[in-house]
Length: 408
Image (tube, rainbow, N blue to C red):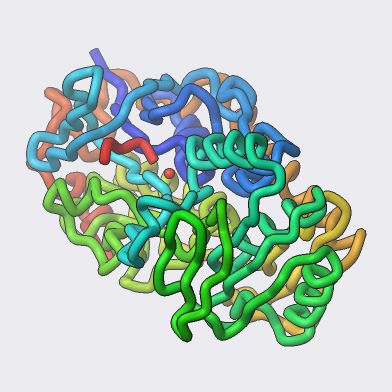
């Protein structure tokens, strides 16, 4: 009797959900999605959660194929040799293939005082905690550290509600933006009452202030830290090769350089040592491509090299306006941008459209299809369901080549 190919997706963010849904193309694939939360988190709305303008969650029943098993748990270690995962609550979880999509969170900060006195917004729990603090202290001076998209959006959201936050950019405001778009964003933030400090870096956070590198102290009762992202250390702790940030090193098919039964997607992947910009725009493309790599190996065919095409970056500037910075396919910013109310509508369309994209993918393969012929075993599997760890499936053409469900 045939048994299903067991695929475990670690991480239920944009990349993980897209991968799990795409894997449903085959009827002989059983997918388990491991995620520490029972609902899908819209990372691109977490600043709204902190500002009490959105709850930033969607039920998995809306965005996940009903044939995918959701396991609410955290993975603590990957045993590649045994092809098993250790979990916090469910014991060990075996797999034939693993999709590593643990996502990203706030970077491990070494700036004095950040851990004690600053508040990140990179996770649902972070944003919910900040929401409560902001609600409890409506007149407290606020400083946002980090001049990227997250910092801009957070500062604008709070300013629109009547606060007068200070935005400490480090270097220039959002280096990704074309200078024309940067001037537009700066003007909007200033008009809302945000004090924008370019060329100023936070050197220390205290209970009541942010100290800059020139010694200036900015009064701050609530300091919001958006300066950089890091990734969970699950891969490194499990003995897998990672880059300097901890992203899993893969070839150009998103396959781990250590084990071709492990495929990565999203913020936690570093394909060919050149990872893409972290964010949902790359995640929703990498997730399906990671799944296609797994499906190719099951079928005994050569996986295709990864290809990601960028369109730009959209940033909300409060609830009414925003900006969309167009880019080349390689993520280089163009001069062209759309701002104002139209920019705000584009941003909201992107947020809603991303959830719609997940929902559409979830509905594509509701009925089992692609069953292996009777009496045959899917490529890359012995009748007992195992091949030596790290080995490619038997078919010669499948030879090895070229987001967070973890416990910290």
